[in-house]
Length: 388
Image 1 (spheres, rainbow, N blue to C red):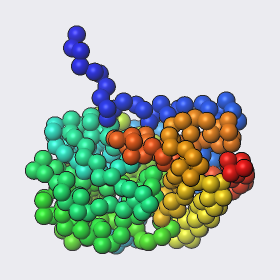
Image 2 (cartoon, rainbow, N blue to C red):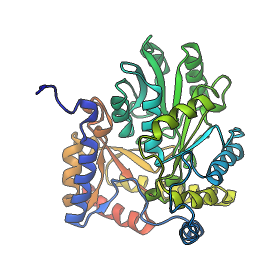
Image 3 (cartoon, rainbow, N blue to C red):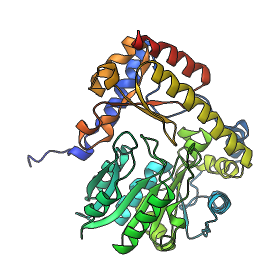
């Protein structure tokens, strides 16, 4: 038998193991789980009822169309036009996926060849490295460093080689909360055009921007035909278990992604697609209220973490706060997070799991604030024990 390891450094399952371990610790100790990024309440009641109605009416109970139901593809197209003045043909330029995670996987499998290089922000959402590895490509990290976590664009330019095929962006960025500026996007776009690169941009937190403005890079001159934009209903509407995501791109790119996607889930989330179509048409007040609610929760948790002695990097977007544990006399995020449930009754995630080079993220810990206000207030009260 070939002695080559069956798992490599980029597909080692550490992220999944840590999330499972932290959740088990939360259950065993009765700790408040601020580790995993999903809300503890459901989204709008009318959208939940729309899913129930679809089930009762027999909509989506059998296989939906491969690209997604027409109603949802039209709603996604309308959403991009409404918020960003971007026009996409719902029949040829929109693809519905089983959440953003499948969209990422299908896109990497469709657009990459073995030994292609992909430049991606580090720390990174945990599926990026795995999906790149599954495609046989090589991930090249562009590390975002504290305190600003801004991309070094000179470093980005230096990392581009003849083997570079694709830039993988994430803005707003998980886990740091960084939001790309217009100037940064313009420079990235110019580099993509200069080197004839594809760009894949994960924008699942598009409606959770607290500072700055979210603008898809696909809207910039010369980018429409080389960009795959990934979105998701889970984060915006607080129904993460429904797994409804999407891709918008030019027809050749959507066709390629769909060719890979059909051999992954084939189709998914039938009845929920009808509900998400209605969700995307909610009035502007929903999106404004959603953002305002999360902003208040961000400020509540960030202030509490600072009071407890953490170094706090207040995020410009997403629903995560990254902290520095060194002011608490700590330096090992893994050890700190494993002890935190017993010490303070709260669960967090060590950021090191989001890095290729674990030492880069060693002193950083991530907390999620997509929880009820009373839960966050109790978590803050418990964390203050660390400052005593």
